[in-house]
Image 1: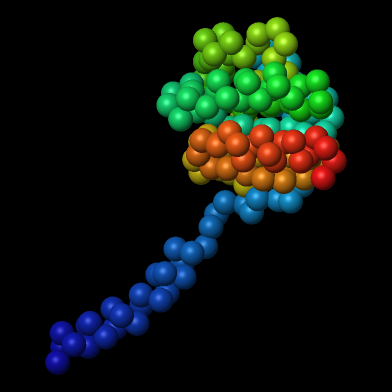
Image 2: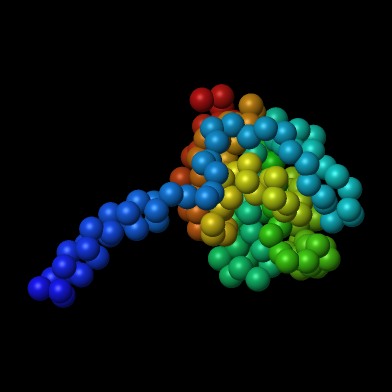
Length: 173
């Protein structure tokens, strides 16, 4: 009888444990992103309002050690080139452990190439929490001209659906 009481009591605590696991210490992903500042590779403070696209901006969280992040960079660069003249821009948020690694990452991936409308910024806690503290990278957020999050993808993006979403924003829909 003693064992059955112990079993009954242990089952009584399971709902409490499950409820505690459901709570998240991460902030919710907002509907709209406020202006934020982060450092670029030169160490200058850059405001989102000064580098966002006029109609659409893709904010991508990534790091040099992330294979999926590296794999999607050619697509992100292509999107940047294809839609730049229509008001689209990419803002990369580098999540490497060391600030100095960002400059090497930019050079290795050609993110500073002429004609590429890409701004690379180094992450900080304010920017990270503003986007709901993404738990995985790559994490991509497509924002409209007002800073509203119109779509988000955790993990590598898919070209066709991303192009469709960008084109809708660029056409004013």
